[in-house]
Image (cartoon, rainbow, N blue to C red; front, side, top):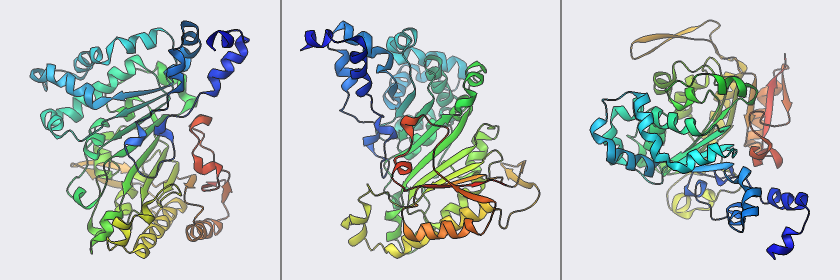
Length: 420
């Protein structure tokens, strides 16, 4: 069979390779963050590259387009050999000590000219011992050093981080409040970072500061999938339970106070409640933010509404769930429209340091719950009252065509834009 294929014109052989391309699972439409985002048994290009040297040559340029890195395993091996030096070395020295643990394969991929468009960095399970050993040094030194080593070898357009909540916060050099985690079923959280493609050349040529990944990567788009709140609704005072979140303003400001490239925040969760969204609102008002996207209801692919253990026998009142996300939409839309906002800068404080926060200047708002009639009416009614806002077709300008969300293709999303 291989001999017969090799007799085909090179253009047809290349077309076979192109037809086997597929988006990585970390970019697929998944209801809640899970291990499915980094576990994928369907690898046709990898199998094809093993057929012969000729097929390896054809496939190699795109074989590593979507790279997967087990950060937990890598950091455990590194820490075992470098425990004595923790806290006594600089970020740059720590980064240099991590590079050998990426292996010779990383250097081979870079030197061979293979294109790495996206990278999924994951931690498979909770690692309390590792985080305890690293302590504060983990957030301030080891995490930035890890990303410095990664970006030394690769220059992806997008990065996806999938990890348990504490490990997810560690990887982006911040912390999360874990005190109410017992009230939620959140095994993983997902963070997606994208660079603004129009600034590619400037980003690559700029010096990479060994700070948080958001600043090293010059992040323009931040997507945070927080997980499901359904378990919290089993408690009578569910609105007093808060999940670990990297978007809490006090922690966001403390970790990324010098971040100027971020223009788009996308927040996804399943039935978040109104008090929690209020705690995230100040982050949505980050001075450079111009576009906010929300997905607060379960997507059609989710089975959460049919889960008897959580809904039927868990004393969860769905009326509360839908009421809360409707209030969340009203809260964020009011902010986008400028209702009840100050007309001058607001003085805020983080750890005693004063910061001026400008009033929000949001120009675009996207909802990925537009297929739900009640929410659609709420969204349309609010924006139609303001003539300067117009509804557009949804298309994410920061992502290649491959990463366009499924919601945009099946009518589940809409975008409103300030045109005046």
